[in-house]
Image (cartoon, rainbow, N blue to C red; front, top):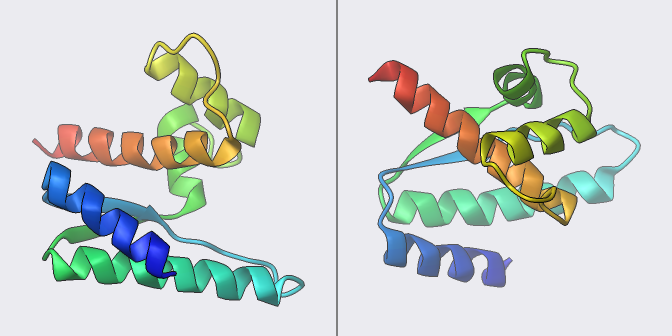
Length: 116
């Protein structure tokens, strides 16, 4: 978790954002180890954001899907294609986590754009 926190601190130092978006993670009870690892990673990221005094906006997976595709039940493939289309990319971002993180960033972008 140190690597996640210190890596994010470097990025925050370099780009000096004012706000950060993060996905709320819901894990099935069948995967407690995954849930615990995700909680640790989120904690490291939120701590780094708090150190910098950033506003953190949390999005549920349904909000992300709805904002990018119009459907809160969109598949991972639909999200990947929406990200690819919106950013005019030549190919789908890989690995899947890159497309997921980009989708969260696009939600923040659209939220801030509509709020202005």
